[in-house]
Image 1 (cartoon, one colour):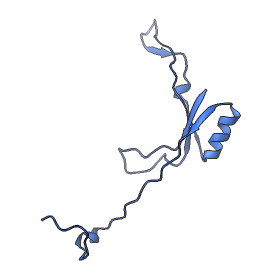
Image 2 (tube, rainbow, N blue to C red):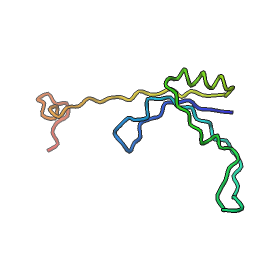
Image 3 (tube, rainbow, N blue to C red):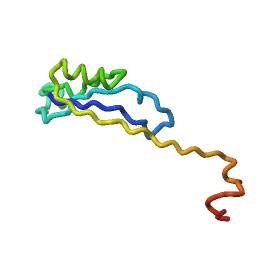
Image 4 (cartoon, rainbow, N blue to C red):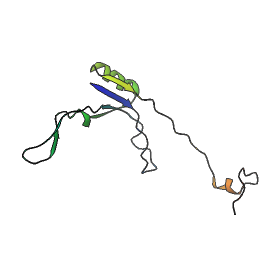
Length: 102
């Protein structure tokens, strides 16, 4: 079974970085058969492994788990975000790099 190990990115909807510190192992969604349930009419699927999401403290723990379970996996390296340091007083600096627009 194919798995993917990665560190999730920050949500674009919030400024917080919650739930971005742990490493995640997700199973790659395969083309499992979907069918309509005859009683309720809901869509059902045979393989529910695509709904499983395991979290680990470190990347090494996630890799060890995947190896112990015999999973083939790919590791997506995490990209550190660039921090742009700004201060309000820099807007009024005499050595301002960009001229005033008004």
